[in-house]
Image (cartoon, rainbow, N blue to C red; front, side, top):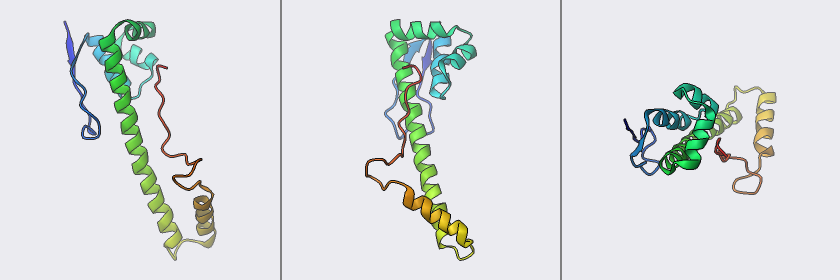
Length: 137
């Protein structure tokens, strides 16, 4: 029996749609787990297979490999978007701390120093966003 894996993300407008891929139910479960950021070991436990089975599928089954790569790209894109949102919120928080007359002087000073010590975008050394590496590499 073959299961069809479909792209199912709340961020679907951000990435190209993932074409349906015919996978076994265990493979589909593994792809879904990896798409949620689980490790290979955790995905294997969840699907009831050994982790070496996942590595075997990845080496020998092109459809499974493509589905995993798509899932990992989608996961990285979602994390990247979430990090950008968090960074924007953090910057607004820092700005409010600096501008508020109710902020104690020592907090305002620490906030200003934290902002000034960060490398300035887009200069080298800017650490946002961090590239998400594939857990299978």
